[in-house]
Image (tube, rainbow, N blue to C red; front, side, top):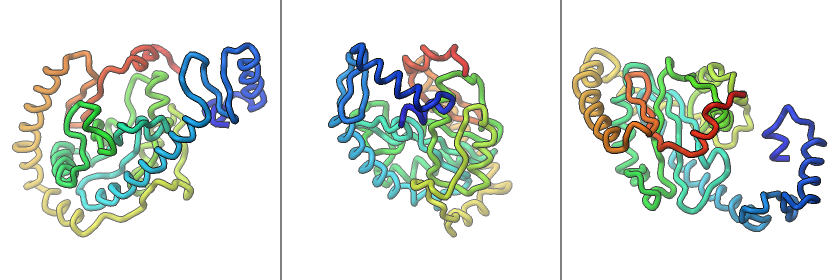
Length: 268
């Protein structure tokens, strides 16, 4: 059923027939309704253990998500990566796509970094050993960068599987509407992992203080120059092969992934 859900254009009976034929030809292995390629170590019990681990990690992430209501200029938060795909392991972190108000991307990034660092809940480096159950803020977007090229297979799967974590209906739907090409699912009242909290008094007060000319000065003369210098050093250290975007409209930090490179030329 999971495979059929991932391939909505393929009839369920065709998926079932394909899997049964794969088992008969010994290209696939099956145990208690779970299928996997014969060259990969998996199995029904391992999958069940992964599902229990995923559930525990979601509980931790949901506890952390309550802090987003206190942060100014955040419009929404989507969960991406292994958490959205369900493909977690003990060292998995919490990748998120964070939508912020235009003109405040650097200020917001520093506030987010400061808060979750104090909570010891932010990934601080690129070492997998230090990342379990910590938030990885590797992608900030503003309205002009909600949708971006290339519309390849990798990005389609990444966006199609995003899970709403925090934000208003209007903000989340604006992002979803811009990415119809990726078949992002519509919001429903059944989004069990989504917190529908209003912004707190702290957040509204900070937005009032930093939303005008004083906030413009902080953004352009303090936050932006410091961030640009530090992020440029990060890019130089990591190399141009990494997927790094540093602009007033978007901040993105990812390692070059083999499967992204492999599927980068494939479109839907």
